[in-house]
Amino acid sequence: MFQAVLTFIAAVSQAGSSTIDKYIVSKQRINFKVYLIVSFFLIALFTLPFFIIFHDIKPEASQPFWIFLMLIGVIITTVVNIVYYSILRHEKLSEIEPVLLLAPLFTVILTSLILTEERNMLMIILAIISSLALVWAHLKKKHLSFHKYLIPLLLLSIFISPISAIISKKLLTVYDPFSFEFIRTSLALFFMILLLHPNLKPLKNKSPKYLIYTNILTTIAWIIVYFSYIKINDLYYSLFKQKNQPR
Image 1 (spheres, rainbow, N blue to C red):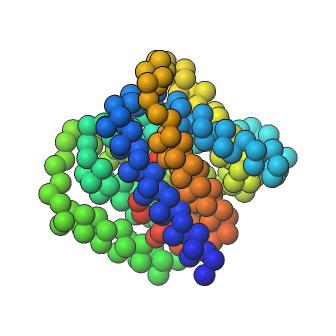
Image 2 (cartoon, one colour; image 1 turned 120 degrees about the horizontal axis):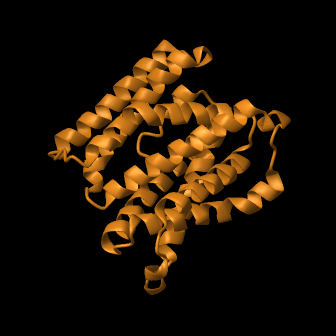
């Protein structure tokens, strides 16, 4: 019951954050580069106190394999977020969602192939049916205009997002969720600053409240996701994280 409540909170937080993100990028006309830098800074700031108080990092996290795995995860996070938020300014949220809904489907399939301990044919079948049903419901309800901007997001949802989920699950065996999110977000912020070179001056005329709201919701949602990766089977949780923006 408690897990179901947490799953509901995560889903609502992610849905709310996605809606606010679209408002910030499209209506407030905040450049996606500025949005990403500020958002990752805020998430790192929000998770810093929890990292200081609750950090529980195993000694093997300093081994080359785990450092390499963390860097791969950070690079994927950086690339996926840049692609997603650059597309968000062009496309309607309703047109992006069906593409994002494919990610859990391929996460389930790839996880079952790579992580044999996660293999459960019943849950694989249920996850596939659930994902396809949600995609079909979106396509039936709305006429999807598949623009060229959606192609990179489609490729990322099919090939990269499942790998990212598996890497996160592996890293959470040596990091606690708060430490993982703080370190991952801080490193991604560093890479984004190097890559994007944003001009933050336009923010002086914008209200920061929506940026704060959306990143509080995002932080809550992803911390719950990470705890769920630890506590329950990855395949089970893939059924419930159907609508999430990348992080």
